[in-house]
Amino acid sequence: MADFVFARKSRNIASTTVHIFLNILLGISVVLITVFSGTPLFGLILVLVSKWRVFAVRSRYIWLNIKSNLVDLIVGISIVLLTYYAGNTLLPVDFLLMAFYIIWLTVIKPQSNETATLVQSLSAVFLGMSTVTFIASGQNPLLTILLAFLVGYSASRHVLSQTSSNDFTLTTLVCGLVFAEIAWLCQSWAIIYTFGASGIRIPQVAIIMTIFAFVYNYARQAMIRYQDDFRFRHIIAPVLFGVILVGIIVIWFSNPIFNI
Image (cartoon, rainbow, N blue to C red; front, side, top):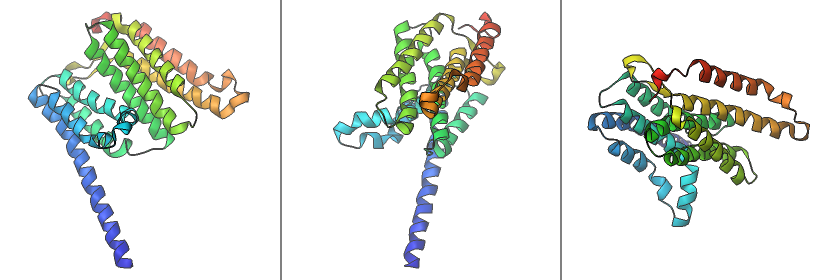
């Protein structure tokens, strides 16, 4: 019996080690292959292939699996596209994206507690909205609206599916619409913060939407916690922090020199 337990633990350790190694290899590969090929196609294929389990089910479960994995897909696709938009030369931003994706695959994504779920959702918002800004630049505003809606819907659904037992369809749709509306308003004044020759470019709307998502989630949790005794004072601190921070960003950090 002891030998069986030892053998089983050994197999678990070996499989875990192999799984971590493959995730590290994936994180490195999607960035390097995108940089050196000069096209996002191969990186996107790697991301989709890594999600083969999503499609290896009966047809009636595929759509449900896709919705459940939207946040992970948004992060993976965003890593590839942000690498592509940074150019076909290795820059510091490529190593940052590579490091984050490895941490995402090995540390952040496997966790399912409330804090980790929020971090996963906020990561998808920040990276997703950054990617939307670059994709939709100079394009039809409808593209911005659709992509922003998808990011907002996915991030909201990811949190609610982990923490709520009630029907959250309406809430996720409303969150998606709010994202789409804000992205549409920012479409004509897309501000990008650049950091020298590092290749790091951060869209203003990505920061604003991440702050909004954090405050929104805090308020939702407070409403659930206090229920009938809920008062605005329970959320006034994060709301004021979010409003002041967004106000500072919009008023003092919207220099048109960054406008794309």
